[in-house]
Length: 362
Ligand SMILES: *Cc1c(COP(=O)(O)O)cnc(C)c1O
Image 1: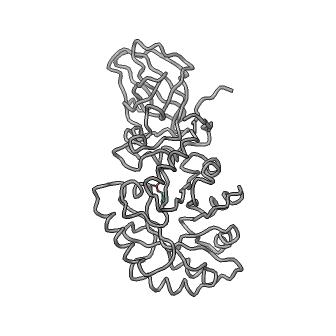
Image 2: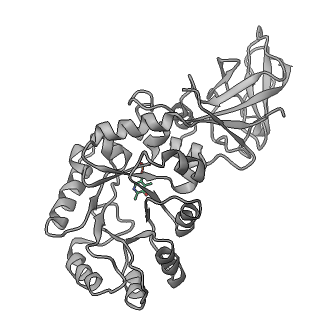
Image 3: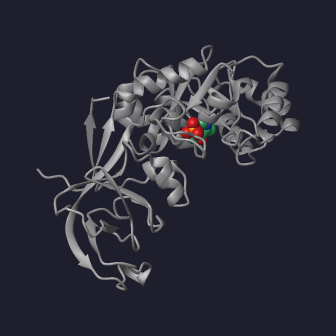
């Protein structure tokens, strides 16, 4: 079958990227964060490939954890958003999933639950993200209440999350690290702080467990570098093909809204990919696209199923030729900058229409 829009996942790169996490955090256990369909790479594909390479998994939602258990994965699995309803707590217990505990609402549910099983808990501390978690003055009370909950496994664990770790010059991360150490010094249990940016840039944040997300997929957590630059190998590349090559005269416009007017006579390539596949609609004029391995600029607005590129007057490209939207020689980090977003949203945003193919070449 001829493939139109498809993503290739280089599954072998995972082992290399896990090794980079081990090198950066040699004394920590690795929790692989594979929420949001493993950042668009396929939850079960990635979980099976990581089985035996990492020490545990983290997901955002209960259902994601249940899928992992049903697929036979046996490592510890932490649900980062925890639970909001009784039924979710029941599933956590039934499937032996651990939960982030971040609110008094959850404490009430725990108090009113009795079960033969015990729930592994990660108390989330709000050291400055101000999204989820408890503040300093709440901790001793939470500790007392949790200690009294029969359904909670003892000792429970502690985690926090960074707001600005991707900015190596921001002083907030050092403050968050100091607060976390201070707040948890007198408590047993495992501790976890670092995300990918913490692992690579903030050595003081390396504790019992690190939570590696985006770097596992070979993507840099920093805006000013690519995965390759920080020693990682990207997993995903996105491809399609030209479906038409047309002549455009100087002065003609292309696409919805006439956002581009050709300054020259040229050949226009029409590529079968658009925001309906997850290619970013806000990619600007000039965003690089590889046609037969050569960089050409995106021109005109991204539509649902197609984009248009300026092939140049002397181009020999023709319908059927291959196109790469990101991948080798075209880092997804670069496309993110051209689209005023972050690479996380690009890989997460691949839609079900895009066929996913695995490659084992490195
Ligand atoms: C998503 C997430 C991570 C992983 O972050 P990366 O930047 O992808 O490494 C770690 N911890 C929490 C709480 C998260 O939500």
